[in-house]
Amino acid sequence: MSGGVAPWEYFVPPLALAHTAYNTGAKHFGPNAKLNAPGSKNAIQNRKEADQRSQLGDAQAEMARRAEELRYNTTPQTAAEAYASRLRAQKARQELGAGGRASDYLTSTLGL
Image 1 (cartoon, rainbow, N blue to C red):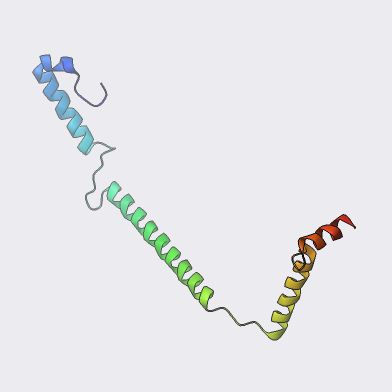
Image 2: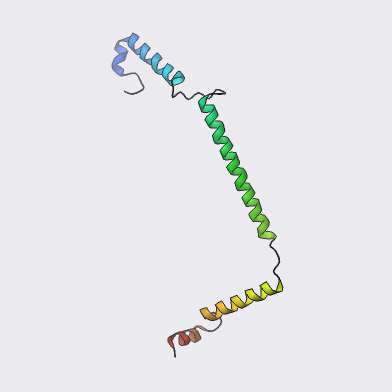
């Protein structure tokens, strides 16, 4: 059994106690120990991850704020831009046949 005490070891109590003590020590003081004491490897890694998460959160919050600002504070169109936009919309309606009835669109498409 990995990482535990095998049931047959309890027939030899000193062996079971030694095995349990070794496993406990290895878990808490070995190279893969999950110690979160200040200055430990895990504490430093956790702090770096928390900093990255906060920076990412700050960047996302800034992007959301800018998007909301641009959503409601659009720059006004000049007269020329508004006219060009209307011309593009009119041309698109004509090309798609949205300006007339469906039968007109079908007859023009079929060439009748």
